[in-house]
Length: 121
Image 1 (cartoon, one colour):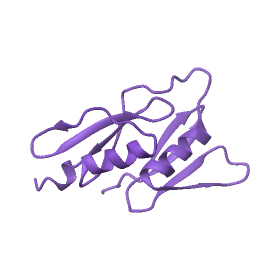
Image 2 (spheres, rainbow, N blue to C red):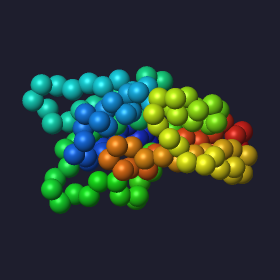
Image 3 (tube, rainbow, N blue to C red):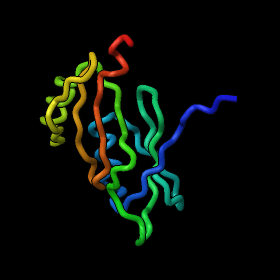
Image 4 (tube, helix red, strand yellow):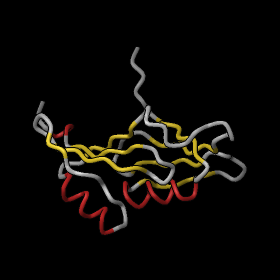
C-alpha cells in the first residue's frame, strides 16, 4: 500500500517569521486554528504542506539533517526574483542536467530550489 508524503513538520521558535518566509518566497497559504499550536502552510501549486510547530527548549533549530527542496523550472530567474524580495541564495550549481541553489529559512533550516524535476530523466 502506498502512502504519499503529505506534510512536513518543522519545529521552530520563529513561527511568525517562518510563516511569512514560506508565504512570501514559496507561495504558501498560511492557516491556523484558534487554540492550535500548529500553523499550517498549504502550497498553492501542489506539493507537501508544512506544519510549523513550537520547538521545545531542548530542540535545536536549523539542523542540516533535512533539506526542503522546491521544484523550480528556471532556477536563476527564481533566485533573482527572491533576491529582489530579500532572500539570498548561494551560488548556482550545475549538476547532471539540472541547476540548484541553496539558502536557509529564518530558523536556519536548509532549503533548496532545483530544476531536477524538469531535467527529463
